[in-house]
Image (cartoon, rainbow, N blue to C red; front, side):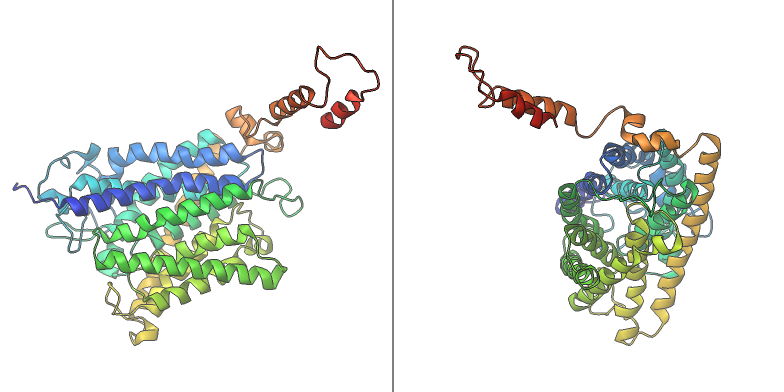
Length: 466
């Protein structure tokens, strides 16, 4: 094969974008970790970091090949053995075009594309964990990440992200249905949201659901996580242009304005409904806007992006209440934000797309009729149904065999101590240090000072202990 010329600027853009998306998984760990109760924060964060570890390995072993290998039937699955262990992808040959479409095909190493798609797989799996917070066994979760990625994510990634190029045949949603999903509204958010709903049903409700207060234990962590997600999402969306040109710039701006609009819309909704605009609402609105703009960022104008984001902020703010009405315990609102936001963002392409944007199609409101809308709907429903059914089966088998949910006693004690033998905050030591500090300062006399029985030192120490 003849070596191809590699554009170092394009390669740098892709690798930098991959690094930004990788940062999103620790950001998600902060976001989710702050939203749970104090007895579950480490377990919640470990579920994200655990997915980062397991999916990194299996993506290299067989995941990339299943997602971007030559199709082996009907646009449903890539050849698992074609790039097994990433064989054949470490040299600049014509194989760099496999699974890659667009003007940038062949201008960067295949391994750069491998890296970029790997971090998408990682965060998709990590997103699911928010639906089962406070009650899942960590070991079973780790097994689930491998099975779910293999059976659900890798095939769906093939459907959505693998474009036909030359002799290479890709997935059915990208090439036959021609639904537009620029950066993962179906493959990432609808996929994870539907899987989260299925697992929440399999594991059942937390003890005290709808009865006990289950407030976020650390809103500072939540805000930090939301900020990291917003920062990393520019790699998620703009990086999907596979080059630093006009498409990437347009996508970057659309991502920014849609997210801002969603944050404002969520806060306004909160203010009208509850009387207060909260930090949790701001963080949640940011994520809702990012989710919604992901599939549509290449097909709408900035004005369309603002409208899209504003609708997402209102709809997702209202959707998180569905779990109380319908009776499923989606702990951290994966369904209300990722499934609902992903559905709206995917369908909005068929409504708000304009041919002035990089994707070059018109939606219903721009004179394009229903053609693109039905394509978007079919793609969304197909991924939703596929993910829900298979996740429910996988979760049920794991629950019936090795057990997925911790016991009631363990759940009451806290999964951090039971699953990891750790606690997020060593408050006992903190109290001891505080008492020692006070006793060594103005609260007690120096050892060489003359004794004064009238000094009320004990009362001060007793107050601290209390």
